[in-house]
Image 1 (cartoon, one colour):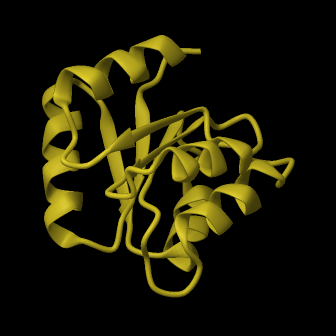
Image 2: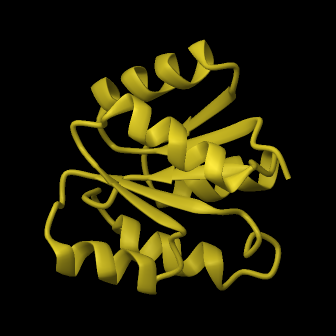
Image 3: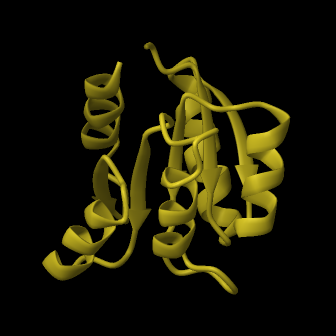
Length: 121
């Protein structure tokens, strides 16, 4: 599977703009969501090839949302990369336990993120 369509889930408009710009410049089609409810709407509209997931969000957090998506048979095959300011090893382990394929901390290191996306293709 090659990654073309990416859903970015983050409650920060600045982060959404930064990641959208970065991904589009690298040839990806990008949709965004600011919370769990938005994310499920976007998933239903057009299933992405990859989800970049923030952790700290109002309502359902990224760990909970990752768990919900990876347990849903419709979306279980969509890889999720956590993209968060939570930089503790315990956070990374917990994110991977919830079903995330990888974990990137903010501020995002562009080459690192691109390598992780490429590794999924």
